[in-house]
Image 1 (tube, rainbow, N blue to C red):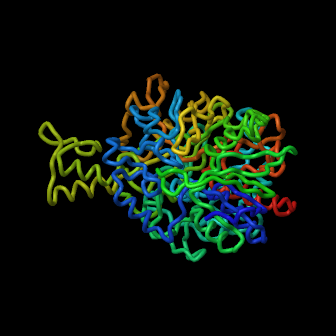
Image 2 (cartoon, helix red, strand yellow):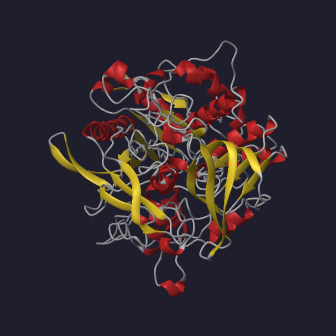
Length: 618
């Protein structure tokens, strides 16, 4: 819907993801008139439409359930939809192949290398809709002060004690299942008497088996231990949502919404009666007045993903919040030239808008345990090894956490499908069917059942999420290529620093050591040399090609800092250049830190909402 002509708002928010939704809810409850501009389609009344799209998708990737369709039409002759023909396109992991990662008709992101940026995101209620596993970790205190403690990276302008009260509020808003007794490691503290909203999700049999073998093991001077992972999913009824049923497909979609997503908060915001959302409305220009304040945001609307624009307009307000993701936010800021008055874009006197793009490059490995651990049940991950998130080693290399997967080899090789097809057809893509007279076996009946029982029940995987350096050469700029609305697409320049690569090497070594400790047989495959998400290193005197995956943790590009010269926003997430402009979300992170970012995004968004409301800015 469009507001009545001449309507002015207390707060205008661009983006309906977790940060935008949380600010809208708090402001709506405070009686403020809030307008949200959302580039994607509106949310359906339930998950059935999403589930149907996922079931019928030709490839089951995280983007499959959501609009617009990532797949090309039969008439196009291409597997993926052409982003130039879509009004609000977004990236997909399917565009990371050696042949298409730099093809502008297949990849929305215009990738300039030298390595590929491997994460993607949604433009419908934020990337949290599908990328988020539910992991709700707090950052450890030293994540905020890596430069001060280890002489690496940069410090945040805020510390753990500043964010801690907002972590509590974010945990309540999301509904986090965890136990304080499990989470007091590496300096994390809680107020006396504090409890998480719900008890932890029970550990899986995979967790128990790995814990039994790994707890007390030493790596790089650190004693390892398996720790329960705080989860943004229900271990008991909460927010009128059901208890987790262990469907093991939390990415891309929880079929019963036991896992939190921004639609929960967005619905609550709309229920206040003070919040209005305009969907399929793409913010295209931020206007600055003669006093340096934001006066309006211009937009373009469309009715169909590939249809013509249906209208243009502008909205005015007192306070403006851009919560459009760490790639789409800098794109909007850089597009806003104000007829040459802001030639470098809005909020960009520091020239740091779009700089320091980061992710958690993920090292994925997989193995068979000696005995069954019975995966493929429960949430995708219920525990991890957090011991390596901090330590003296950070003066030399990046830190990382290890996520323990409950979904067998589904992430690495699309099991149980791949192994089942192998056994039935006598092929060996999984590596689990090597036997037979000169070729793999084709199995049927009891032999097939026995082989599947033996193999699938012993599968597990590890994912090491590695800290990435903030480097100004990793950037989002405006490409010459455009989308269907004629707006520039994001151009990405991306690489991994030596510090980050050293962390990746340690992740490989830690994974290898854990498999050896567990007497597990590793099946991690050597990546293709043409893969744009690979780099070569020397490990133990041997050349080795390492493949990284994207974690969906798109961070940086409009960082917070101590002055307008070293950052884009201050510790309040307010633009140094425009006092009524707030930039929120993961883009404000000066570093990617060592925990999954969503809980910190939510905490900082709630802090920003409090600043707007208590300082009576709106």
